[in-house]
Image 1 (tube, rainbow, N blue to C red):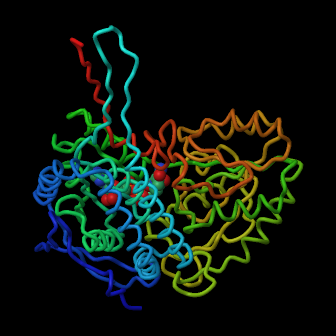
Image 2 (cartoon, rainbow, N blue to C red; image 1 turned 30 degrees about the vertical axis):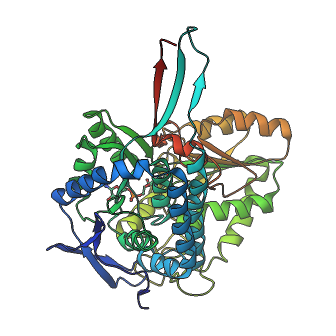
Image 3 (spheres, helix red, strand yellow; image 1 turned 60 degrees about the horizontal axis):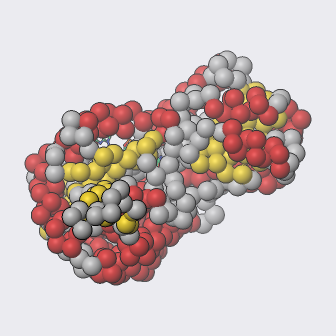
Length: 481
Ligand code: NAD
């Protein structure tokens, strides 16, 4: 399968120039282990050059009328959607997810660009009642400045647009450091941004195989005013500590340990469909994917049977092939983690219901797996598996379910299926999570604030709240009137 020439580019993008480097690193197709391409392996100096370019582009970019910035964002949205198919193919090639999911991600990622193109025109300040007859209080909403966006491999397109669209809309230039496994989608996005006319320096992409080196520049350079990170909690904590030195504003979209609770009054078939969508999408490699299924005793056996029957229908294979529901995992380390969680649970008394082994296709393909009789003594209770493993826990009472769901340092997404409206309110209010889905297995949309509490993160992306992350309030006291 060849790379889509109309969007493919294998150079980094700094100050409106496509840059090469002496050192390059390879990008691999996880479905075939073939090398797809190589991209420049940039250094700390290159990252500083990108920050300098962004800083230089900032004054003109922030002064552009919001309507012009909005028009550019809208043109970028149109270009992304016009290339939906080739972007989706590129994403499946470097990331592995099924083509249908890649198409969905392109549309989802583009929706942030469309939304913030509209929102750019609504970045209003305010006047407030003043504290003296001769004074007035004005509140300006200003762009924060150069933004560094550090993104993961599991959503190679949407995690970039979810940060960059609101930053650009607010009048901030961006330096993007994409994940080393999936730089090609990031570069394709930059190519489309260049084509629609974003000025040089406003959007930069720094590709690198040694992220710590680039991260150090982006979190310590005083010209960077905001770091927006999506990735694992340990790396997020490190970056947050590094940001402290220059008191940088930071947003952190980190790991999760999502509970999916099925109560005994739930529509079990709907719950199974929701669980499958939430658990096995992207081979279980999403931050909001179900990590623990908590099922009430009265429906436990029926739910496990229905889930296993449905999971057995999931077709595993190369994401480019028709009908594939689950692609490969991103790398061998991801397979090791799934296997270690299964082995730990089985050794401590869990029951294997289906799957449990690497897939016959080899490589990093893994069987969609369900294990039952899981307890909180097992590693899956506390750690994010990030793979196609559904561990099913048992509970008796509503309060027990809420306590189990909250017994984690994470707090990103939670799901539950129930019908009784009192129960729905009680559980919805009791869950310590940034996002709760009731009788739904998928909740992401550009229209809602996405983000977590506790160690799942700081800040929100999407909706009008997403713009706040890239603005500062300036209070002006006008006196002597
Ligand atoms: P990761 O933390 O390993 O990497 C994320 C990004 O950080 C990559 O670009 C990587 O190159 C970079 N990075 C790694 N070490 C760095 C360092 N020392 N300094 C600077 N940058 C560094 O995470 P990942 O494996 O790519 O992604 C999976 C994780 O991301 C999971 O924990 C998942 O839950 C989380 N995630 C969260 C959200 C969310 O919105 N909350 C969304 C997607 C993924």
